[in-house]
Each structure stands twice: as structure tokens, then as C-alpha cells.
Length: 400
Image (cartoon, rainbow, N blue to C red; front, side):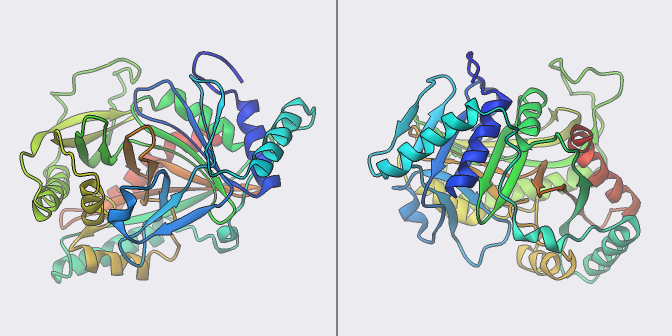
């Protein structure tokens, strides 16, 4: 393990290998524009919380998939917590001491071992991989356009997965470490669990957060274009002169209107709105509107809002019910955690949930990359395919 708020790849590899041997769940994450990396270990795995008001009294790490049968949170409850700035484990009072001691002994053994720690959890969906080629995806977009013309829905987000072969030396920890450097403005995460498999992601989209001062924040993020080639992605830029198409602005307006309605529906007032403006997520630009309410003291209100928000039109569509039905019937693969949400819940007095985008799932010898595009009446199938290619480009390059 390194100092200065970082965790070495070797340490993360040993962590995942230990979790496999101990059959426990691990979550590792770094919030946007921060240095500190947090780690959660759970011996009880992922639990379903169906009472959103009860969520206000619970803490852990959310790993909720795109599709749920109702308003529920999939939550990993912590037995052990670690942060890279503090540099030591915090054992929770309820944790089984025998399991804790066994985990720490094995982790130490893994770190001192000369053999490579090339093990992580693999989900059973490895046997059910479907990869839509360009022809299949553009046909699906055309079918969705037909539904839009029939007024079935105004927008639907169609995703696809891309299967890539892993080289013998690639480990999820390598990708997590690379994403930390590239996506400083994103929520970077590494999840490994017996029933979920292993996921790495770098999400630019905040679903909902609440800080210690009671400030609730939500982001409407939609529309995509590459950063102009002549502009450095590492430098902070003013994007005021970026041009956006009518289709892009309309797509972003769908999401903003939906979020605004969700706040109003549960009676949250004094909503402050900023945007839309152009923001960068490493090599891509998006249109973003920020929503904020300050000094909200009712603990369960963010979770009531969460029940209204997920899934937003940015990952599902409008009308939400019809769009979701079309997605489940036509995409031919399970999104699982892609376009669901994840993040810390009531840890350190704060909650930060992000939509799981720019992500990949690791199998034994392959990885599945996920990306989607928002389909509206102005969509061109070829351009929507190109958008999904663009969104997968950076993570694809990191795997090569």
C-alpha cells in the first residue's frame, strides 16, 4: 500500500483474492475531485432493502441494478471499512471477530506471496453474453423510432455490450487504478461480490447526494460529443462555445424536466437549478444541469426522491414504463448493474449515489463493456451506434 491517499495495484489485487477465498463482498471507490479511496468489506453480502424510509437509518454501499421489481435498494452493509488517508481498518461493532481476523491474516499472506493474485468473482452471466453488431443495433434503433412515431414513448435509451478478450496480465485493479487518473471528475468504483461478479466503472452522473449540511444534489446529464481534438482534456476549459444539436438539447431537456417533476412530486421546495452547461468527462462532453436544495433536515427525503428518480430518462426513457418494457423485451441481454446506481449510503453522515455508467464487468478471460444512446424522433441509427462506440472507446483502449 502506498501513502498519500492512494492504494497500490498489488494491494487491490490481494484484496480481491482474499475476498474470493473468504467469500465476502468488497467495494472500493473514490468520489469526484477527491484523493481519498474508501474500501468496504462485508461478510453478509448484498441485502435488499424494500422500505425506503428505513434506508435513512442504514449505512453501507448501494449496488442497485437497472431493473428492480419495486422501489428497493440493494445494499452492502459494512463489517470493515478502510480509507487510504486514515490508513487503517475500522472494524464495525457488529462484525464477527473471527471472520475479521481470518480476513486480515489472509490479506497479509496474499500481500507477502510471490505468486500473482489473479482471482476475482465471476458472475454466471459469463455464459449468457450477447453482443449486438452494428447491423443488429441499428435495426433495433430503427424499431424504436417506429415506436416513437406510434407515440408509444418519446425517448428510449438502447444499450449494448461489447465483449473483449483479456490479456493474461490484465486485472480489474489495473483498470480501477487507470480510471482514477483519467476520470478525476467521476465516481470511480470497483465492486466484487459472489452474486454480482466484478465491475469497474467511472461514472460522470450523480443520481442523488446529501452532505452533512443537508444539501441534496441531483444531476441531469445527457447528450454526448467528443472533446475537440485541438483541446487538451487535462486542462480545465470553458466550454461556452461548444455547439449542441437540437436533438442533444431536447434529450437533455427530457431528463431535466423529469428530475424537476420528481422534486415537486414529493413536496421539496426552494429548488435551485444551474444549467444546462457543457461539462467534460475525460474525452467526452455532455450537457449537464445541476439541481440543489439546501438545509434539508428530514433524513428519509433523499430516499423518497431516489424512489421517484430511478431509472431516469438518461438511462431508460420517457414514458418510463413503456420505455423500460421495450428495453427488457428487445435488448437481448441483462444490464445487471449497468445503468443502475451505486455509492456510499449514510457513511460519514453523507450519501453519494451515482448512475453506473462507463463501466465494465470482468469475467475469467473476457470483459463486457456497456454503453447506451438516447433515441428520440431526431435520431439517426448510424449516429447512435457511433455514440456507443465513442462511450466505450477509452475503456476499450485500457484493456488492450
